[in-house]
Image (cartoon, rainbow, N blue to C red; front, side, top):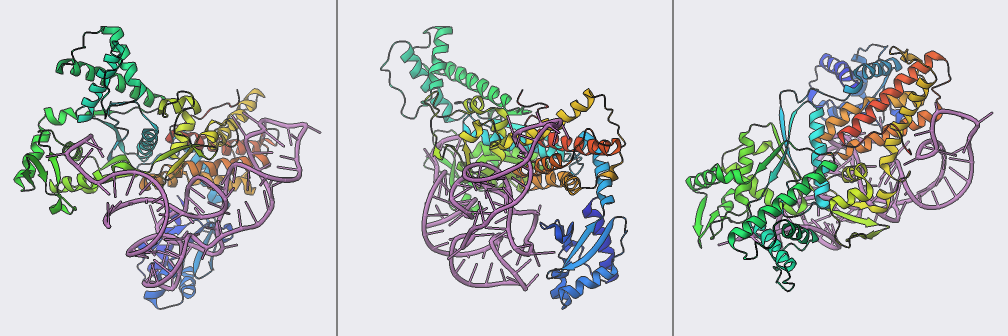
Length: 550
RNA sequence: GCUUCCGUAGCUCAGUAGGAUAGAGCACAAGUUUCCUAAACUUGGUGCCACAGGUUCGAUUCCUGUCGGGAGCACCA
């Protein structure tokens, strides 16, 4: 039983007695100010207009008709403009803690998504280069969202859209070839204008030369094809290694190529033509987006015969929709905003249900240090790669920093704070709470204390203890809200609140060395805190160390 | 010009699907350890919630417009 379920029960039966049907408007919230009780309803204010009565009068009538169990609710009162505030008994909280203790490491897991499926597509970087900061934010958001849905009981597919077909792959081949020729001694061999200037291209060229010599010097189509493939494999290998460092493992690597080989691109073209939504002009094939609510028509097949990105994107989303997921989530950077509406329009035009699609757009990341923007790595002199950042500040810090802000706000990644292994770094605050608890338990075991599993929780009586229980009770709701709103940072914020409540408790209440029964109940409490922090960090893909400062 | 995100404390950001006295971390100042990890805790205060209208019993939150900053507006992806 939760606060919500009990409060709803007693309110609905009171409203029924008054012949008021307001079930859908009945919402409760936990007031910020503890003087306003544990739970609060604004229903009386909402009803004021249609009942043509003063909210406080209505609240009074509702309260008069509420029947409640005094061992669960201790007080109901009207406050302010007409709020009804509920105070729950300590016993209610002890029962809630008992439930947490018994669920143990499963606490927070839910069945809301049972029998339903979610596809989360994230990272999806082209194999033309190494991952950079933006990909890092993408990866952290995508993986955390996937975790959240898993905790809600959904069957989650983590997907990576692998695109080795477009124009950019030819640019990669040409870039490698130019560096290759330079490695062969033609130092003035021209580098393509729009080529990839990163240092890794040179590494790839050197590696090819070391392994296979100069046999690709002709630069023929077949040579370029080999260089392209080599670069693709090389880059993708690096990408996967970087993701692995971030504790990310995707289930499906959907290759764009299969859209062509399995005829899915052609099928979509045929369908657009059949619906009269595609026409030829200047040798190119255009999609009538202007008839689909967009500003202007756009090209889907270039006059060269190659599709623009729009067409495979539409075909790919069609493909995902046909795979029958209940929710399909894409994670994109702000630079992709324009493509989203095109894909939606295209998918709808194919008669598919676009309401299952949810596109998360995250804003850009800037790296700062001591208030100044950092563009280049001091160590390499090149722009920061994700791998480099991981090495510099550590995996846990990277994952945390990338999700600690709302996804729609610009993220300032402060290198100085990230590097700091101290109290300034918010990650350590959470991990420290976990390590502290582990340490106390180790300590008890060392002293020969036996921790039993049926402590008398009613012995917990201080504010610090009760606040901690209340904090722990929020965990399932927070997971649900974070998933519904697609906001991983809510988990990070929540864990900080839990850690704070724990540290306050720890400061005020001793555990070891006090009377046995109370000690046992405090162990139960503290073990639950440890579980919540560990589960929360797991959702964020961050480790929960048992020991800190070695 | 159009699309989109943002504008809240000195800085970085929250604000629980519209609620009561707008919060946290950092920075700054002062304290707390014979005692389970002081990477902790306690105490200090600052806000025309960018601006102007509108909706509402009630707006930092929703709508419209203005200003300011970011990201887009290809036969690149």
